[in-house]
Figure (tube, one colour):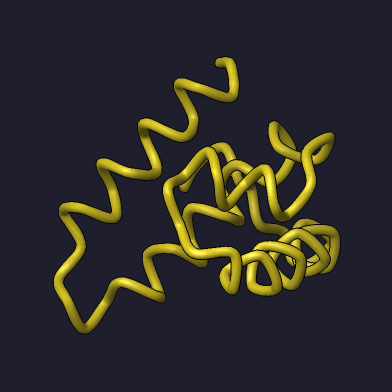
Length: 79
């Protein structure tokens, strides 16, 4: 899956998320696609997903968590 398809999937997931679950859904999407997006910057993520640049910090945090989550048994391809 290319970056454009991933960004479209993220946008759709965020559009469908209940208002009070938006940030949780965003974090989940960041974790889900972390491996596919490891070559991009936080700024590029925000631009591609149509988010404010302030979400770049969240993207970096979630990307850093992925290794620990995988070590604990999470399979990101099952999200």
